[in-house]
Length: 392
Image (cartoon, rainbow, N blue to C red):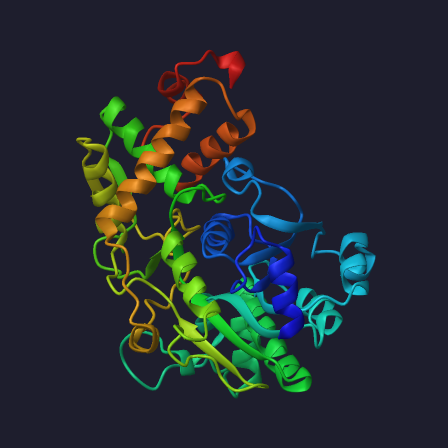
């Protein structure tokens, strides 16, 4: 503690009560917002990522990191020069915050190499883990304790094959639990539903926003899947995730959610107000002040699903535990969606000025895939963007 105090006093530009935090990832939708919040809270940040930045993160996050390590966790970290140099210096991190652990080998490549160099680990997980869990013994939303695999081997295999992403994230949680016990650190798994907010690299929210604008301009009716009016979906705002992660880094404000050393705890984190897909789209239409009709058609599960939300089929998640422990105040949806619409409208203006040709193509492909417009092709896209065919 004395050594850390002397280091803080030497680095007069930084607050002495800040923590040393290693971010694995940290420059995407959730990580970017979190990095900004952590920096503003006075913490010292080291990032490990591929270095790819979308949107304006390069400007927004400028100067936020004391050290940037350029590594791709899809490859063994033993082959990453930046990571090996850091390990050789024997640093200590109060918290490791993992945004980019998608497969077990990424956990295996990272945690043993960092053993005894950190106290706490936060893993950004997903409500998809309930897709590979056994049938619930209760009604209502999924609770943290429901993420238990079926006893029957064939049922387990069937669930694993049906949702590979859920299986990979579940394996990450299981492996982290084993490492926490082995290396005597403590971990929290933050299970998130579909995340909404500005700067989403999946383009899902932007896809719907632009489709609505095209529908209004072309006088088309949005075509929605048959579950849209009644299927309740859990969502969370990206900046709310960032704010709760700041709370979790502070042991004085995290409501005792951290287990003892060697233990792990899972927390569902979603806005307590669920929405149907139709409710979400209606709110987006209203925020843009558009006149757009919607029509429910077909069975989306009969063939290939043509929707972007929800990403899970098992329904919403229960957030009683995190609300009780953290007393967290969620951003009202009308404020969160208004900020998101404003951001994506600004990006759309950039597209119409000819910026980001690669993103323009991705957005076109996404609108074509989701098939909410009964008539959508390059000609419609050209009219919307105000561009010639040769520029598409």
